[in-house]
Amino acid sequence: MPFTKGEIVSFSFQMPDGSGWAPHSGVILSCDDVYNHDKCYVCAMLSSNGVNDLFSFHLYDTDLEQPSNKANSQVRCHLITYCIESDLQTSKPFNKLKKQAFERLIAKINDAVFDV
Image (cartoon, rainbow, N blue to C red; front, side):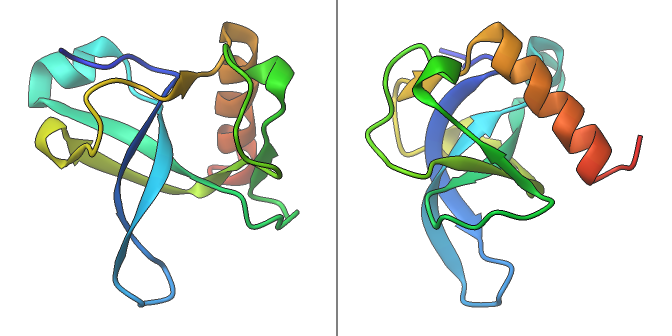
């Protein structure tokens, strides 16, 4: 079953500090056409480390379809990668961003990462 944009899934991210791969939650950014074309998803990593910087998009329960089970949850807007379905460590999403939160996230990524 393909996942859709805004859904929160889990898979291994390569850590930017060179410490290898670690399982993390990620939010799917890509639309269905990406999956239909290449059978992959473009995702941004989620973290609960409490960092507040240019690349932080803090998530609140009002942004999610279900309350979060983590404090200080945020999308790390600059940690974007792709994953294939077999790399996902879940058969269904943990949660999903509401439409308005997803649109704000894309705007934040465009501003912070691509300076659009």
